[in-house]
Length: 274
Image (tube, rainbow, N blue to C red; front, side):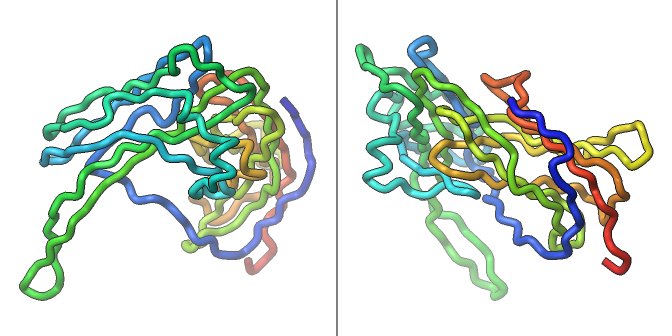
């Protein structure tokens, strides 16, 4: 854990950020968001739910993805060799049928007798549904029919030793397209294993003694195959007075109660006219 005090000064930059977000998948749910397996924890369970009003037929498998600054990309064959956890794991069932409102469990286990390599590996459990014919309306009196297939995924991490460390980097204040302040920062992995947790942003006005929490971003992972993981935390404010801004990367899941890094910044008020 690294605690850094007053490492810089943040000015409010006037610029617009494009917001990228995956649309919520209302026809299938997968929980939890991730699992970590090891020799001492060789078994995990995901729950798939069907909140839709139709029967869904699905299949279960693996996909290997490399981490990027803002998400994931398909792993190259070379990256897959060094990264993939799938060869060491068994998933069941391989297919399923769910009635409306129903849910079921998917089990992940270490292969019997397998020798886990040192360090950390990761594959993503992929749950896909068969395409179904869905009507959509258009401006004219006639409608359209489209075949829609759905897919959700969650990382499954396989660990054998190693430590997780990370630091906060490249922190700045920006404005979104509505002119509201948001913090942009990055997680820089420093250890052998990935990190997981939340970004918490606190603010103390200059001359004040009361600290306010401006925002929290959950489900923040720092994967070792990406040099940085960029994170944004919206505040919902047009402006902030001078004061101190503290950005903290707190652990979650198996890292609960750990603080990976904390940075404090003197916050300058916006220039007149900004």
